[in-house]
Length: 316
Image (cartoon, rainbow, N blue to C red; front, side, top):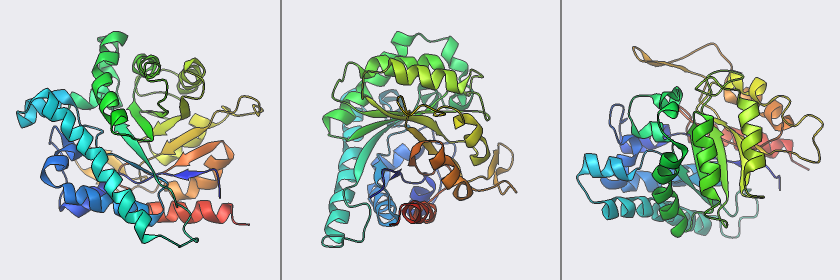
């Protein structure tokens, strides 16, 4: 079996199962934890059946502040919703494991659950997870305090790994690295929001900050560093050189980009002539990618294609 772990796709699959998108909703997909849990369970199963080794809880935009403000519930009730998200993922894994019993041809025999943690900017509902504009106005301590309750709730419910994702700036990434040291048994990946082939969303150098975070983390705590929610065409230049001649200090990389379509405020998602993520898979694996999936506008069919490509590469 290959060392490459196939992740899931984006929330598009959930929107298909729920019968509509949540654009403009301050809770985004996290609202479905309350209104349509059956769609969440179905989505986890879709990805598992497509070949995902790791599925993520629907908690990217599930924050205590957000639930208190927009659902009118207490802090403890908010934490309970986050815990329930783990239950839905566990139930999906249980159902899937039963389905594939005695089927040795399946390559994702023991799926893992990642607890999804979006950046502080995602809770501001102003798109700042794609600019990092808030990073200069909040302290590292504030960011640690903000991330802590959700991380704690996810870990207490038994997620296998934390998905710290769409992080737009060094300050928040470094706050997360420091915070994770409070949970020495936790394992996580750190995935950045980047604006092009060299920079984080806030304009700082991706490689410099990614390598620094990996080296400053507690030994063995960060499973991979990389990027998500990005156009596939930028990924190679972001990663190129990180693992050049570094067999002794290899850094595992993670990528789950968007489909390749372009998003604008006025027109929404629009097809582009740019290459899709599937065309880059071999190239990325050669650069040290060990975790690969999809983000916006990707669904179970994309995961199936990724799975097939990975399995073909490592076929004996």
